[in-house]
Image (cartoon, rainbow, N blue to C red; front, top):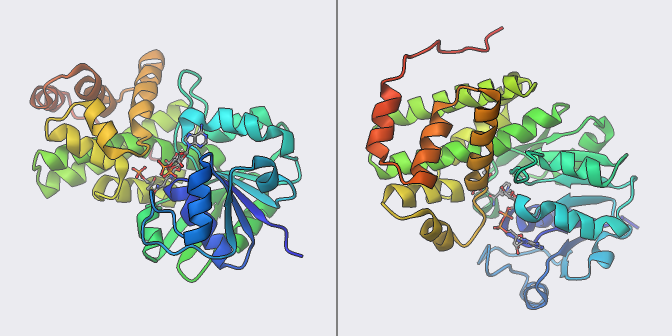
Length: 335
Ligand SMILES: NC(=O)c1ccc[n+]([C@@H]2O[C@H](COP(=O)([O-])OP(=O)(O)OC[C@H]3O[C@@H](n4cnc5c(N)ncnc54)[C@H](O)[C@@H]3O)[C@@H](O)[C@H]2O)c1
Ligand SMILES: O=P(O)(O)OC[C@H](O)CO
């Protein structure tokens, strides 16, 4: 009998990932905390709140019973926002084993500790087989059947190979990487720049400006990566520039939408409340700004955006200040 796959989290990404694997023929058990949602999903084969109209496979069963979902699973995908990630992993710990493949799909950072999700998994489950799935993966586009690629990163090659096998389908591809930190950092940092891009789109900037913003975002992300000991070359792949492009250009991105709302003059609380889903970039912006200040990393976009988002600085003034900075080299990590 094929062992089942577990997915923790009932949001949009958890649901599409669970459904890809179920459609590939694997029995999938998805844990969510709300009983009535689980019952409705099993009866209607639809996650009405997050992905209305997206037909779910009969191989996918939603449940609030974490023990039933995790025990005996071959692989456990954790798709919980970073703000609750450690708490849910701690809840899951009694049933997790070091034989299971444990994969984070979360693109965020723990508040204050600046730990990425794979680091939390390592701390909570020492000796575990850990991986990270990250790439240009708008859940709503995956649900519409658009061809999509992602990256599975792990220092365990057998894990990557197995996850590629479980996930690859006629419309989904997973490429492998051994650079867990670089892949995870790319997926986390790009959310900040998606907020900036959404904001600038609302201001009606030109295509030159949009291109400049994305490219200078990559430069800034790379500078941060180098300062943190990561390999910036990983940002040339799907989990770096790939995810940066999609998140900075698509109104389907929640981070872009928060930025757009701010650009229309809404305040942060209203922009986030209107969204009703997680926009990881808001917390990541705060945390990266703190890191940049502590470690003296030159990140003008992060600094400027922080002033706009959290200190109500006038956008035009912030842009004018940035335009007054001395332009530095184009690519500053070239080997
Ligand atoms: N949606 C996407 O397109 C996408 C794509 C790739 C990666 N991601 C990443 O995946 C992660 C999850 O995103 P999502 O899109 O599924 O989010 P979402 O906002 O659609 O859903 C989050 C889910 O987590 C649940 N949740 C929150 N706190 C919880 C807790 N304490 N216990 C149990 N459940 C809890 C919510 O109830 C909800 O079901 C994020 O870090 C996001 O960056 C999202
Ligand atoms: O909707 P966002 O902004 O959380 O982005 C979703 C994915 O990370 C895009 O790859």
